[in-house]
Image 1 (tube, one colour):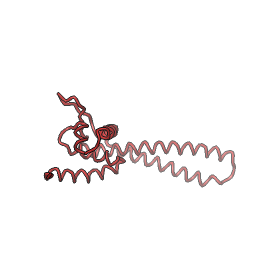
Image 2 (tube, one colour):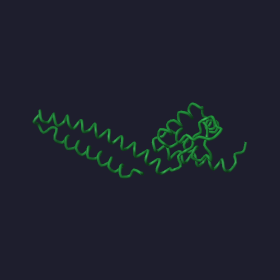
Image 3 (tube, helix red, strand yellow):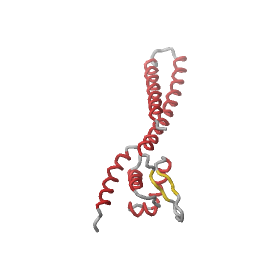
Image 4 (cartoon, one colour):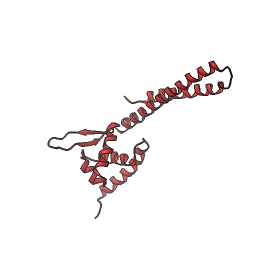
Length: 161
């Protein structure tokens, strides 16, 4: 069976594009699925995806669900079609950067909160223990908290509206 030129080029693009997408913390399957949907000329059903990618409908459903949660894929409606159809969000840069930036903001906010709690414990410990053993740790901890605050601020600035 001979693969036509368009399909051959599309497959090469899908493989290379999915490598980039994986860097945004997507699984290899999710990355390939997104690349496939992005390159598709029309919205697809889970059956379409399963047939084309040679994967089970269950794995396609799981992958699509993850992509929906990240706002990388949308469910579309087509008159006369009873099955759910899905298509990739085409605003690549904005979509991926916002998704990735939101992950960073959430992670740094969470880590910063945890570090501030540790700092509170350290302050209490220093009050009850009059040694200077904790001074260097306290200074480093404050630097780490400041680092997280700066990272969060930077990512908030970068966020696309």
